Amino acid sequence: ATQAALTSLQARQQAAEAALAADADAAGLGALLPVWTLALERWQSSGQAVAEAGRQVQLAQDESVRAEAGLTEAAELVSTLEQQQMQAAEHWQAAAERLESTLNGTSIEALGTAREALLEQYRQRSDLRPLLAQQQQLQAGIVALEADVPALQLALQQSAAAEQAAIDTLARARAVLADRQQILGLRQTVVGLRAYRDQLPHGQPCPLCGSLEHPGLEEDADSILLQARAACEQAESDVQDAAATVQQVQGASADARAQWQGHQRQVAQLQQQRAAVLARLSAADAPDLAGLEAELADLVHRGQQLRQQLDMATAAQAAEQQARVRMDKAAMALDAGRQRHGLQAQAAVRSRAQLQARQRE
Image 1 (cartoon, rainbow, N blue to C red):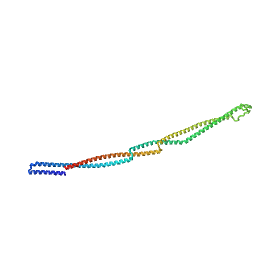
Image 2: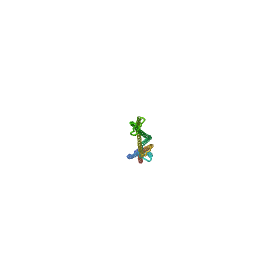
Image 3: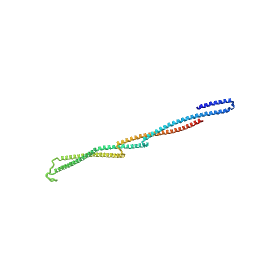
Image 4: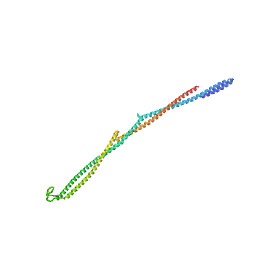
């Protein structure tokens, strides 16, 4: 419309110039032609000014259109950034709620400390496992040794009885030997008296008893003496055999007593070791081996749950931090968009003001 108005104005100016020239010639106003020429130049200058003003109006309109377009774009950007910032805030809120739910009123540091405490408790309780196994081994050893007690006591009693029987046999053998030696002495005396009787004259009194008769033994004194000596030698052999038997039985009895004493020392040693182990277990308030295994299994289960919670909390914390960073970036972008929107709004105001000024011109 502005260009059409300018074109019409220029056509009217040209028509006016032609009419003025024709009128001047017809009226014989050739002398006044410079005045008309000056007026015409002013008219032309005014038309040029109008044309320039129209061009400036067009430029202002273009600038205003661009400013409005920029303002619209900035407004759309602000709207998009507001949505993104809202989404980032919602995402952060959800991440924070997940972190809070995972922590369940505690903190990651507290979870780590609790896990370390569980690990230390597991190590301490695990140290009781070999003590309980040792206690069971010692108890089994004591039971096994106590099972040998009846046989050892029987062997000890039998060896003592055999020793006493051998001693009694030796005593009887020695008594028999003494009897045989006494009989042998008597027999030797009888043989000596017989030799003395044979030396007495017949009819004379005996210098020992005064008897005029000197009776003698009818049996064979030498044969009886030989038998007595053989019986005495047999008795001596029996004494030697009984003494050897006593030595042998005493050796076996000493072995039985030594075995019994070694057995008792071994039992006492195992009982002492077991008492020391039981004292350590009692100080640690340890259950039996099955109870300890159940306790260790419970500690492992609790440690796994705590580790899972710690991993989830760490991941939730990382997600919350990432969401916070995204939310902060979105807020910064929104602030920058709003600043840009403000600048675009100011530019649009200036463009509209400039357009109105150009239109007034």
